[in-house]
Image (cartoon, rainbow, N blue to C red; front, side, top):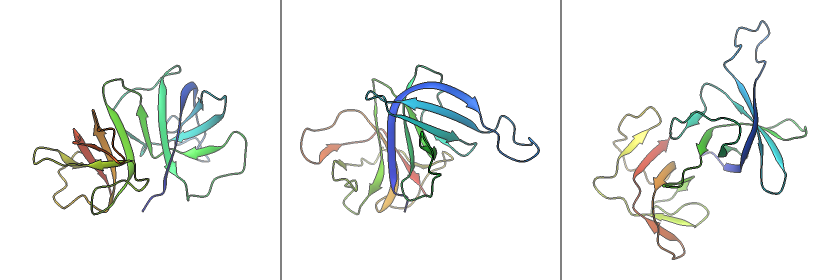
Length: 163
């Protein structure tokens, strides 16, 4: 189970990262520098396996949320540098929640409860159908409105299972 942590901010720059000894991976990895409203900065290492929820191309000036494994080792440098697992480009029309959802479809942080309908697409990261119960999994939930209760409740547009 991944301990998802996130950082949201504006992309200030995107550069190629030098991964590999002979330059054989040139252009395959990027460093995205993100600055939040308080002025804190984080570098995300974006690899070919980083999942972009809406398949959006990210450019400087875009507001994104980057998710990383809070339990993974990271170098003690400034600004902090995290391997990005998931990138979400902010969108005014939908919300995204990345978290572990228990057997009652409540997120680990207790802030969101899912009410899955029979028509809710439940898929894997490769867009293939997930044919089991998505409870007790890490999920990427794409949804619109939610109730104001605690936890908020929503019927998602789409659920992506992070196996």
